[in-house]
Amino acid sequence: DVKVTQSSRYLVKRTGEKVFLECVQDMDHENMFWYRQDPGLGLRLIYFSYDVKMKEKGDIPEGYSVSREKKERFSLILESASTNQTSMYLCASSWGGGKGSNEQFFGPGTRLTVL
Amino acid sequence: AQSVSQHNHHVILSEAASLELGCNYSYGGTVNLFWYVQYPGQHLQLLLKYFSGDPLVKGIKGFEAEFIKSKFSFNLRKPSVQWSDTAEYFCAVIYNTGRRALTFGSGTRLQVQP
Image (cartoon, rainbow over all chains, first blue to last red; front, side, top):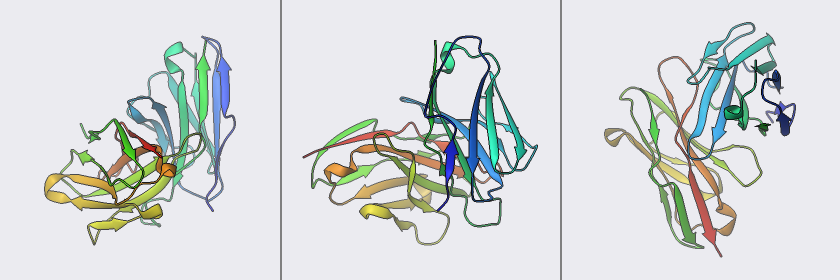
């Protein structure tokens, strides 16, 4: 079974703090993704990565950065948290192109509240 | 811009009623199509997927979906819903642009009344 774990289920931070959200997958997947989920908006792609030290901007990258130093770990960083970044953050992973399907496997999510 | 539309935002059904949730996507090329479900308090799970071949796809828990290329649609169906189907349902698409990331619809909240 593919397992995607996220470091925290719930997180409360203050405006201006630097926030790290960690994601680890155990299936040797090449691709990893960060989404945020907001009511009525579905999931929106923040950043993704196809390989170690590689990153690509998604649809809403402003205010975020990412780090992928190891294949199994993909970190989302909020450089200076703001209240409009209060949301549920979901990490996902999948096989690389041509290997298996494009199905993505999701972690349980981190509900971040910025006060 | 590539997008996915789910027209039903909130659906309320009685047990044993039939379900159809609409999903339309905007791109005319090759796509991979998915339906995910999120039960209360749980993480997203894959219900079914379409890559190629038979446009009628069967998934878990009695769900199925039909890909109609001419209508850019991938509607989800279930002949008889149960209370345990209460959840939020998301349609998602990978557009064949090499990005490999999912584009999600806004979701449909299904409430099944016993």
